[in-house]
Image (cartoon, rainbow, N blue to C red; front, side):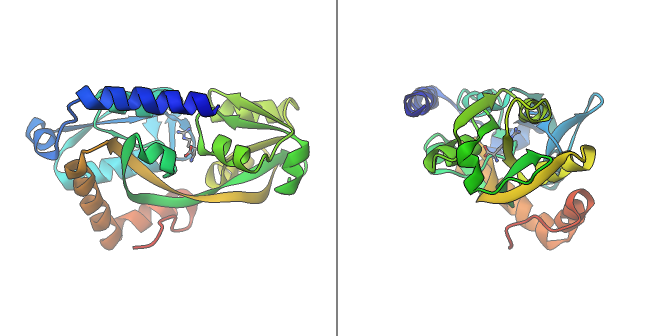
Length: 251
Ligand code: ARG
């Protein structure tokens, strides 16, 4: 796993050196910001029928509007999102990436757009953090959940899935004993499936938008827009709409 991560970082830095991330001026001139997400992580980014929806989709639309540009979406598997960013296939990634030192070596993060944590979810029984040590735990590949669980060896066996929703299905089918995911994603899953029970918080994280390493102009532009939607009340309104609470990390 460590080797794998190293290889990813290495390949990202190789791509970064020859890349030309679009500065804010170029984006404004073209009139269009190109954003990438996964579309499989409800209620943050998901497909409602064929329509890309979710808190992060609406928030990005809000930020683009404030910046005076249109927004074009691309959807990719979660574990290829940051790699495509380093290859300049789009300007930003908004897909619930927790800010971690490993990722900060490969991309530049904006200020966090929400604060959250990873929780343990069980079927019929809410798992404690300590109980994970005796369990087969299911998580989405490439996520901070994998790294955090490995840090404290919080599993008997760790099973990774391409999509977070595959991990839920595996829990429902009794193929894993617990699923670790975002606390708000877990709440959404429980609302759709009464057999699921949310247990203890495993760790907390700050989630941010990623831009290409060195693209400080774009990060500043996004930060200013984020500050604005927080100060004029539209962020809180959107947050309440999805979560009935303010998920921001504060001002
Ligand atoms: N917050 C977790 C992380 O930083 C999970 C993100 C998963 N996002 C998604 N679109 N599936 O890795």
